[in-house]
Image (cartoon, rainbow, N blue to C red; front, side, top):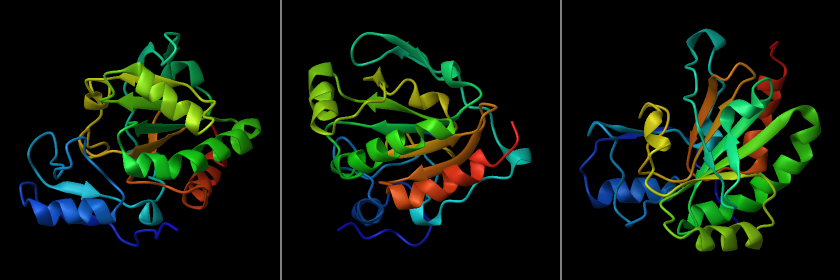
Length: 204
């Protein structure tokens, strides 16, 4: 059984094994198993799901435009879901914590769809779509995922919201297309559900 992390952690980049240990405890991995530094080389802020909060609407940043082909080659865009609350999850088939959270995300996706919630994945650093599709089938995932093998889509987010080297990451996007919550590490449905409920209560 996964043990949720109880605190936010700020660690300096470049501290080697110490940083890797913190990221491992937080349920975050990198594709090469190394520590994950911010894109600017500064500190990494790891906000665990158990400590995540919904941002005040007045301080939210607009989510960048995201569009492209999904794992089946179909075109999909974040903008297609404007007016709905979106859970945006960055994952990779090579990532252990991603496997740990996948079933919870799929279950919550099905349970909240009628409430106006949509899930969208960003499959990152999987050069081979076949590996990603195998992951999707293994977890019966029904929501689409943009294929982002080079991490280009993740780089559109400020490092304060998404560290493109640390996966998984999850964002909650409000109905106006703004980032309402940013989560580092694997998330459970019990942790994500109250965040969604809070954002769903907001007026559009």
